[in-house]
Image 1: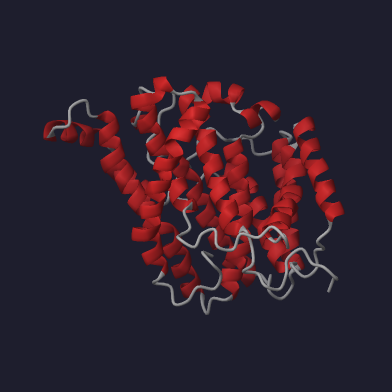
Image 2: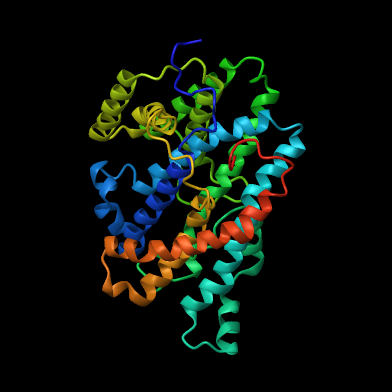
Length: 367
């Protein structure tokens, strides 16, 4: 065992709650640009899109880091589950209740407010006629977002709750963990690293334009769009490897400095998928388990990150619809974030928190 590992023995002394809150609010900030300008303008104006030459946005980077944290927590959750059934129950209780409530509210609260010119019963039924009910039910059960082209088509960017599309891929990653364990990951942890390396190599080839360039749709049915598998698998497995090799990875200011240099080099060379997965993962855990910068009570009133992610887009669309002319992207963000946090708070108190209490035990905080 190394003298000073990146991850200490007490895994619960971390900054994951703070990080996930910051990542979720970063997604809101990114979407303020997307909703204000539409995707075409967003690609030219959003800060990280400009700096990276259109390779990545603030929101996409935040989602990648979400997957890294999930990879770390979910492997531990499986390790401490007595069976696949218990593991699956915990994962479904974490994802589905909040998702379903947000999906239903998007369709039957935020949608009508955004589409009805008069708030009457007949106007509400006219709105309901717009909804492809069978398709939306399938989207909800398979953790996809509502159909983009149906809602808010009069705004710069259409879509009722476009943020939800990544949730399906996160759940697919949850299902990947038992497969890796059955293949022998717990007996030979280097197997996990081999799988990570293969996924990373595929991501690099994809980024360089050699393989697998189909990406026309964010949606791909029950199994998602395989175009996004290399990206999400790579970042998820980076987090998983940090957990599995936690006693072998040193905490080093030198490694942190090198990681920062390589992150900046990736931006400069427009090779983010080549330079970022390992370097940003190291930096994320370097901060998460920093010995002096600890915020253990950040989420003592609830973990709002999932709720912020679930409710950000539809609330932003409504604010844009009614008050967009008074804002620019930054003032838009300042105005909308407090509203989103209120919805996230009630999501935690009324939906997510009660659902988590149905678990037999909590292995790691909001794992």
